[in-house]
Every structure is written in structure tokens, then in C-alpha cells.
Amino acid sequence: MSEKKEPEKKENKETPGEDLKLKLEECEKKKNEYLAGWQRARADFINYKKEELERIGELLKYVGEEMILKILPLLDNFETAEKNLPQELKENENIKGILQLKNQILDLFKKNGVEEIKTKGEKFDPNFHEAVETVEAKDSESGTILEETQKGYKINGKLIRPAKVKVAK
Image 1 (cartoon, one colour):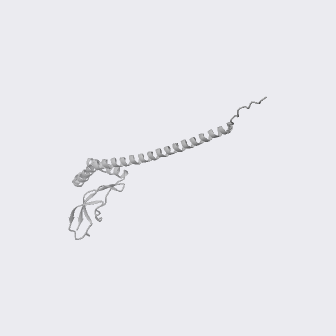
Image 2: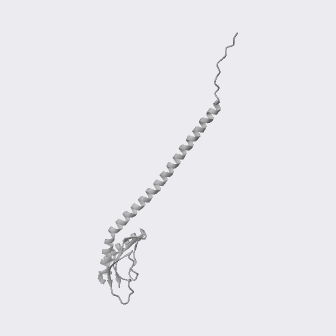
Image 3: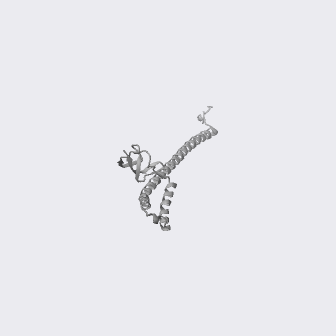
């Protein structure tokens, strides 16, 4: 009798436990990849939010500057009216009330970082002053501001309108 040989079975080298380990490693690799991608996206989003807030802040500053520049002529008119007001009207309660508006505008400016540029008696600084006239002055040093013809203003240290001044020769 001859013995029949059974065909050899190919043995699967991987056991069911090893197969699960490979799948688990693959899942771990994908999880780490997805997690890293999510963390990058989250960091990018946080940076985007910060940049947008800064951009909006700058835009609001610009809008604030524009509004202040539109209000400055009103303040100039109050200054002129107060300067030219006859002495007998300076004590009038109605006039005092109207001039109180000027003080309220100045308080609003101060709260928003707006400040007047110092002029009279200061040295001329072309960064903050605009010379409209030079005047012979024997009792003042050359380059000293003698008179202010229009107030100048800064907002948070940034020039928004130079002061117009008369300077000693």
C-alpha cells in the first residue's frame, strides 16, 4: 500500500495575538498622527484668534483716531470762543455750562489716551510742532516756542495733529 501524502499546509506565522498587536500598533500610529494634526490645527486657530484680536484692536485705534480728528475742530472752536469771551460773560451761568462741554471733551480725550502737546516755552521739535512763523525775540533763546496758534495732540504717544506754533529766531 502506498501512503498518500497530504499536501503540506502553509503555516500562518502570525498567530491571532500577533495579528491583533499589529492592528493595535497601526491604530496607535494613526491616533498619534491624528492627535498631532488636531493639536497643530488648534494651535493655528489660537494664533489666528490672537492675530485677529490685534488687527481689530488696531482698527479700533484707527477709527478712534479718525473720530478724535473730527472732534478736534469743535474743541478748537470752544478754545477760541473762551479766549474771545468778554469778561462780563465769563461769570454767566449759561456760558459756564456751555464751556463745561469743552471740559467733558477733554476728559473723554484723557480717558482714551489723548493728550495735548506742550508748546509755550518748550524747544521746537519738528516731530510734534509745526512752525507757522518765526519771530525775532531778544529775551528768548532761538528755537524756543513763543506762542501756540493751534493745539496739537497725541494719542497713546502717537502724533495725530502737530501743534502750530510761533518760534523765536
